[in-house]
Image (cartoon, rainbow, N blue to C red):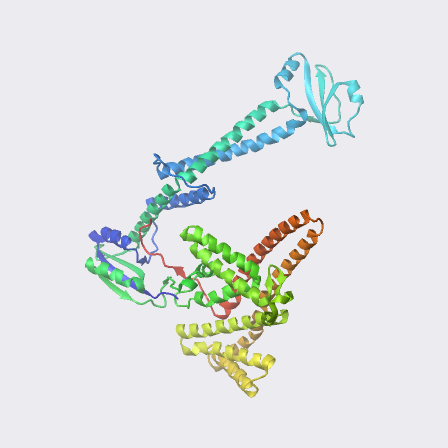
Length: 590
């Protein structure tokens, strides 16, 4: 749910304002309403520095080096930043030189190692050494008769040869002449070793920073962010009464109202509070149960709800968990996911516990649907005679297909119901009637087309739904405007059934995962028969690799497709608009 916010207007005497802000920052409950004021030059420089430090922290964390204590070392963050910047620049230059040098080495390799000094001495003696290359087919043996030619190398279809030209001799050879290199191959290789060594040194320095000094950069980043937030707060105040009165406005969640009031009362500060108006851009702070809270990061991938909207996180969370298991649908895979995430949760840092908890839920859901659909590591449980009567509870493909459609229709109706409540909450009761009309129309059509149990009641429900859609799609309009808009909206019934068909992907993904698992088992056990000893070894390796790959691919699909069903089908039918701004209190960063 979205926590209600209160808007506070706080009046502070100008001489007390700085100390007031210091105390307010320490309290950390007010999301200050900023004014459209340009920051000063110092703040702009700090913001630039913040961006640089963030980039460098990300850069160092990607090196994945184990942290070690920086015993006796106490470098300044700016020194670390400048050193990294200089080394990055040097690394780029060295890498460019290395690439260029490697091209030269590749060009010189066919000629092997020779001394340019010897070539120069021959030239002083009146003999010019000229390098040529041409295709083997193009090379003419008569060149060796007419000139002093020495073939150096033949690689693939190219021949490399040298012509020793006397001072007055004219060379007429139809081949590509190669420019004489200024350095020998051994000199270039030595230079290459130096450059590679320097790159390794630079990388070692980066690894050292990553192991020892990320904390220094993070502390500097927190300090700079606190300073820029403070500058922003200073500029956000409106000055009145000849600049002697500072008026600061901000948002406070009702759950933190008590903290703010205690602070304001203790400092004898005058304030006014009010509820948000329609024109206010109110920040959003979510508060959900421990279960729904696990799914908040998934919801934020799309958007936070607008302040006056219903937070859909607790409503899509159970569906998302169920859809993941529906798509993967293998009890063996679910068991592996659950056990793996449990082990990681017990052994890894607590900051990742939420991630492992949601993966545990995905594992449990996968186990449930795997048993319901009768699949365990690609083995059909229906074919295991020893399961006896238990097998009658396993669904066949037709039942699974129907279940996917029914689950989809239920989520669409559920979303439409949320939209009705949302519209009534935001605009009034009459604005939610059209959504109720859609629910009645869908239920009536489902009974009329599939169940055929309602008879005349179903027809009454359908007509009631059409009436609500036609006459309440646009309550503000006149009678003809309402009817026109309502008839146009009725065309959307095709979209609803299209949305329902989109849920067939749940069945399709589950079936594909099971079929791939079956194929892996089939191939593996055929390999087993190839050899009495090695056949089993290869069979086991193939089973492990095959099921691991299938599990990884299935897990990806089982996460992405429920996300699509949530953000497209469910959010659209629930009338979700989103676009909310996250609540960011003015606080001291640590």
